[in-house]
Length: 249
Length: 239
Image (cartoon, rainbow over all chains, first blue to last red; front, side):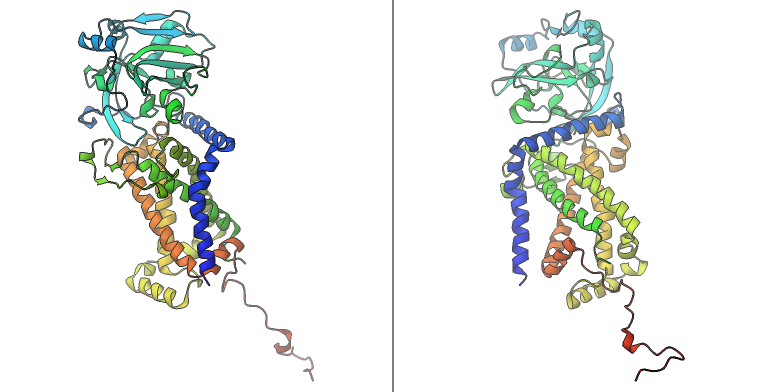
């Protein structure tokens, strides 16, 4: 009879596809395998593209007609509401942590720095993409001005928005921090950032997915480790949902 | 001489596990944004060429919506899958499997050849080498679908794009690559269903993918037993 092997094979496949995976995923071996894959992807991307490998840039007529807002699209905070109403005249961007010269910049200071404009594609972890033109200073310029100390290994972004009662934050390594396309954007498509896209300042880290592009940025912090920051995984979604810290895939 | 080379058997089962994990985690990932677009961008369901159904828990890994875990599995299982595709191509070219069994002649593509293969298959069962339909189907899977999965998967990754921006241009943009990734996944699933249905009609076929089996008609004809050999010239006949 053909029934015996057919049943056992299909049952085997089904078992493999269902319970087994979640069991494996919960084990230390499963977690370290995923972590190894994540670190491997980062190393391979860097090796293939080079530390300075550029994300594709587009022309103005390739932009999407609008730019979707996702995650936090509004900030429910008295100071923020007041600043939004008056054009962020009292907004401060701090550069702090492991730096020789902490900075506190107004929006006018940020706009007065050398600017980079780039038309890039934003890929959400969910699968959708939008294309917009971003303008702002390179993060490298701010880090150089603040004289980042040698022991700094990551750059942390502190944000004004909260989700599920937690402060949004993100972090990147020094390779992405000094990448030419890593900018602090104050404009989208030639206009000041709309609230849903992170007014007044948001990060663009063009070789990674959308959840790394921190919005409503208030502070840029050089750190040697993010183990002790919030949930210890280097970012809001990394802590809350277990997303990969390296979001290049 | 075995019907299935050792390299084929090892790849077959590693690939089977990787494909099942990739497909079922892929359905979970699809649930995160159930719309497909053509071109570089796409986020508005109004612009979608396809609104995909929400895949039920029993069809996905994990069994509930969890994008982070599904992506961990997906991007990890992509390794044995992608390296495996490269491995089996090299092995097939080196051991002659490709030349012997998969390469097609122009006459294989005629309706008559297709009909003849279908009739022969249903009449005699499988196992008589590769008929034109099998050559064409396996050729499309190996030559088109599996490499397309690898390349569209790589193209979707923003980190990989910095290394190979040309890949996105070839595929027509990131959302096109994502759509093709989805379509190729379902084409492979279609092949998988036919493959399983035909395999379970004769369980020996499945067994042979473990043991290797015996290749029919490949071994040189065995020498006839000595007692029927014609007597050597000049030697006295027996008896």
